[in-house]
Length: 171
Image 1 (cartoon, rainbow, N blue to C red):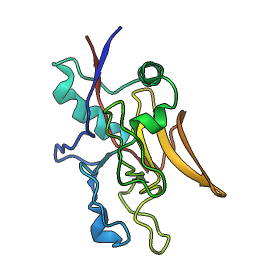
Image 2 (image 1 turned 60 degrees about the vertical axis):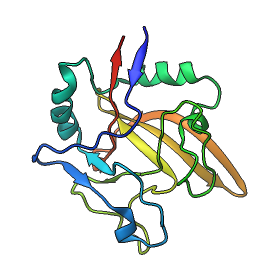
Image 3 (image 1 turned 180 degrees about the vertical axis):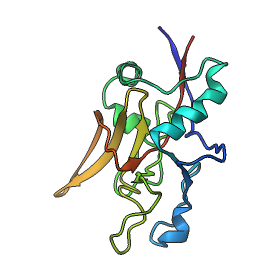
Image 4 (image 1 turned 180 degrees about the horizontal axis):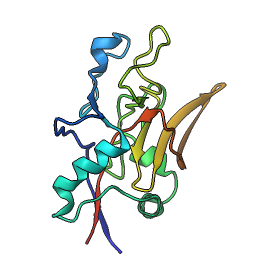
């Protein structure tokens, strides 16, 4: 079936627990680019937020939804989903118009990385999104020696982390 995806990260709060908004430029001046829609959700918070959109058919994507999107994009989906700016080493082409910013992820208590000079794990290097079945989609660019690599993979959820949120619906 055909799918429609949100083209930006969800940026909503309902006043409940488990939702965090981070302004990266406040925490680390090295990153002079402040990514839009820096909201992060625990899985429980993501499930609450999606209820606002459910009547319109929107839902948190499953791993199968992510696989469908990646298959639709074709070769090199990580590069084609990444934005053309804000990635620390190799920007993407955003050919898919998915607008994936390198917003990384944060700890489950909303705290940032304790490493001096860091703001969150993976800022500028990766982005992670929730799946409704408790997995996260992991899009990253990692530096290996002098080579860069774009990838898109689905991995088990880390119970101590909080991710960004995208929604999908069938048409």
